[in-house]
View 1 (tube, rainbow, N blue to C red):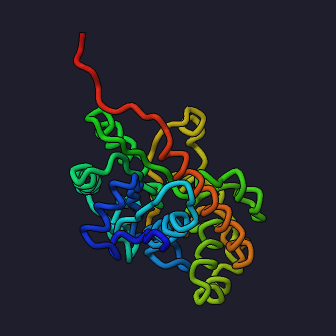
View 2 (cartoon, helix red, strand yellow; view 1 turned 30 degrees about the vertical axis):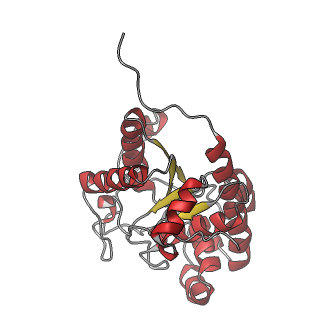
Length: 269
């Protein structure tokens, strides 16, 4: 019988058996926020879960069980637009910590967070730094990163990478929800590429960009709401990029499960 990858389909006994067999619990986090006029507001949360689950089903090296996903993330930079539902930074970080501690308390040795929203990256990095030094084997990965070298070669538009409601995200959504693809294609058909950072007011922020400084990517209510080249997206290319993304994430699950990781800190000398 195939291993059940959906946490919610298990009983307490089968989850205990999965734990004892060395299963890797995966938590997905994303956001509910505006994605311009052409993508649904659950893009980040729903896509992260769908891709994490598809990768879990494809992974043959370790049993992977995907936990039910919290919908909300850290998205204050999208709050000027209707549809954005954000939580405070402290709320998001507390939710992550509570779930990590809960899974560890049940006896799972290691856990992974699969992220689908850029605004969660910095909070996750800070919280994982704290949790790992507290003794928890926990890491996070953006779902698009393991396969990026492969899927970037498939982009055909003028924006080379992940933006926001960009070619990559738009094409993925077309593949994940084919019933929406015709309407999305109609909406993006005449959208021009948006290549600059959404926080720029004019072009006077070269110093910040050159220094690789950090600033919020604020999508104000005067903004187009996307960054990238969504008009270049097609369902066919989306299916190819989705497959490359899932394949690489599945391989990462196995590699991560095998890693020798340090956690906790020794008593000071």
